[in-house]
Length: 397
Image 1 (cartoon, rainbow, N blue to C red):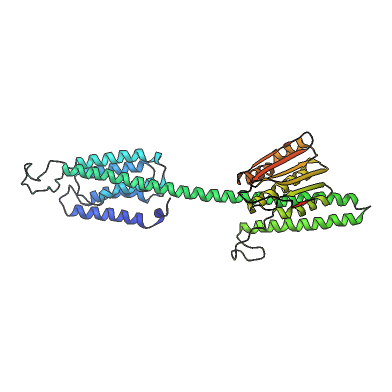
Image 2: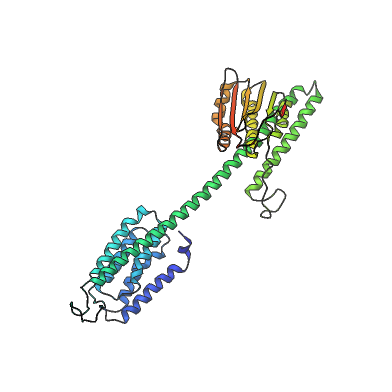
C-alpha cells in the first residue's frame, strides 16, 4: 500500500481513538464502564492497521460506529473512525471493491446518530417553544448525520484520487522502462545483428578465395576485424547502460553515454563494408540535409535492409537509394534480386527486423512498406523531414 501504511500515523490514529473515547466517556454518565465504548471505538478504527484492508472492513467499521451512537455513548473521536477507515480502504483498493461497503457503513452510522438517545445541547436553554433544548427533536442529530456522511464521501474521493494518481505514475514508469528495453533491443538487433551478418559473409568470402587469392582473403579478414570491433563496442555500451556505468569505470560512478548515432554520412562506409564481402551494392544518396532523428531512422532502415539481404535473400545484388522527394519527405529504398518469399517467411518468424524498423519510422510520422516483388524483395520507408531543407546530389556510388 502507500507509504502512509508503513508509517507511525495509523498507530497514532488508533491510540487517539481509544484514549479520546475513553476520556470523553469517563467524563459523562455512560451505560457501564467507560472502557466498553473505548473498545468499541477501537474496533471501529482498527482496520487502518491492516496493510490492505478488505472492502468489508468499511461496513464493519460502520457497524461498530453505528452501535456506539445507538447505545448513546459520548461524542468524541468516534466521528473520525469510519472516514479514516474509508480513506485507508480507498487508498488500497479499486472503487468497485469498497464503494458499496462504504455506502452501507455510512448508512449504519447515520442511522446510529439519528437514534442516539442522549440529549444534545440545545440552542436557547429551554426558553423556546419546544421546551428544554430550544429546538426540534433530532435537529442537531440530522446535521451530525449529514456531516458524517459528507466526511466519509470526501475521504473516499480524496483517497481514490491519490490512488489513481499513483497508478498513473507507476504506469508511466513501467512504460518508460518497457520503451527503453525495446529501444535497446532494437539497437542491439540493428547494430550487432548487422555486424554478425557482415562477419559471416566476409568469412565465407575469405574461405572461398583463401588458396588462390591470399590478398583478397586478407582484406576480408581486416573487414571482419573492423566490423567485430564496432559490434563489440556497441554491445559494451548497451550492456553498460543496464548498470548506468561507462565501460571501464566502476559501477555507479558515471552514467554510460549512448553509442554514437549513425546518420546519412555513414551510409557509404556501411555499403562499402557489405560490398567487400562479395555482395554487389549500389548507393544513390541525394539528400544534403535532414533532422538528426530522420537520419538515424534512414541509416537503420538501410542497415536492417542490407542485413536481411545478407541473411535471408541469397541475392547477388542490392540497390539502395535515399532520395528527397520534396522538402518535407525523404524516401529510403532497399531492393535486391534474391528470394523475396524467403525473406517474408524468415522475417515473420524472427519478429524483430521489419517490426523494429516500422516502429522507428512510424514514431517520426512516416510509413514503411516491405514485401516481395517479381524478383527479389523491396523495402521502402517514407520519413518526414519536419521542414528541413533537403535536396541536391550528395553522392552516387
